[in-house]
Image 1: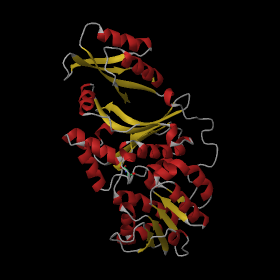
Image 2 (image 1 turned 180 degrees about the horizontal axis):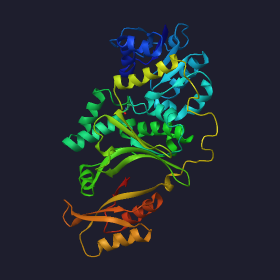
Image 3 (image 1 turned 90 degrees about the horizontal axis):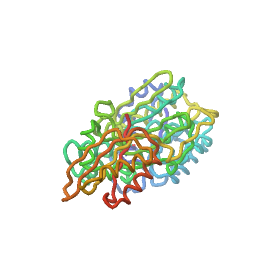
Amino acid sequence: MVKVGILGVGTVGRSVARILIENGDIIEARAGRRIVPVIGAVRNLDKKRDVDIALTDNPADVVDNEDVDIVVELMGGVEEPYRWVGRALKNGKAVVTANKALLAYHRYELQELAGDTPLFYEASVAGGIPVIGALRNGLSANHIESIEGIMNGTCNYMLTRMIKEGAAYEDVLAEAQSLGYAEADPTFDVGGFDAAHKLLILGSIAYGIDAKPEDIVIEGIENITQTDVEFAREFGYEIKLLAIAKRNEKGVEMRVHATMIPQESMIAKVDGVMNAVSVMGDRVGETLFYGPGAGGDATASAVIADIVEIVRGNSGPMLGYKKGLESGLKLLGKDEIVSQYYLKLKVEDKPGVLAAVSSKLGDFGISIESMLQKPSRVEGKVRLLFTTHLCEEKKITMAMEELSRLDVVDEKISMIRIEK
Ligand code: HSE
């Protein structure tokens, strides 16, 4: 019998314990041994958990427990779980974690600490979708050209409800929280940080890039308005929060932001809590992974798959390689991003304004792909909407700064990146 201890018995921890018990027979058949949850550590012992395992409020009772073979870390946070996971590994226990924030900051140290002891983390990216296994194992023959996708279920749920039903931001956020999708601090979801943590993990497996969240562009969905969505549709796009890692001849771009994507693309049709990750390999071509990106049972399904792998005796280096993966490949700076852009400006409705704006874009070498002029609710003003051809981000940033200084242009200019 294999005994499992759980650090953090919240939405996912409770599902892990329950599924191990309720699906015990099929899991035993697949793993070759019975796997039993024996103890869970929680912060507050008074809170009702509705789970049939012993509880403690001291994580040491789990990580130092001689009866526990595998520690599952679901406590959230960064430094505290880092200490407990390190201690569990030092005690020779295999570890499974779903904690993407922990891995976003400490994945390379953890790989060192783990050595040959299994440390698995399938549930840390895209909930129930086995995308880490795919990238780490199934696609290991390939140079990875790009990874692009919807990696935050909360944001996708919110955008879908807001766009399709006109629901209010605060209401849909509260719903996502009550459904167990959102992080303990939902700013991580709506601000793009959770998706960025996941992207950094995938970026390490695919490219060996050792970056921290502060090294990459991270924007959320807070500033997306119904007007942006409507205009996006006029240009033939949907708006999704995408996490993108892409290589070019200079290096790897990594970024998370609201993105306009063609309405007919598969990812544009991914709604609700569903995630979808497209991985392009140089040999396999495009592969697409789709499924529930958050929620107790979906995430627990990935946690348990890792436990089964460990019980079967599989391990290998945590990030899928030891040394020398894509050596010399570097993370490109935020200014080096190359994209197409959508710009929305409010301007005075008088002769010469459109010419002034387009000539400013021209000054920066920005080529306009399409343009719309729409009435504004404010008397004497109109909205100008542009999409550009590919250009470097630093040119757009400088052009926006200069445009906002023109007397005829309102200060606030909206920009959304476009991916095709
Ligand atoms: N809060 C995360 C999400 C949970 O909404 O995707 C899964 O990582």
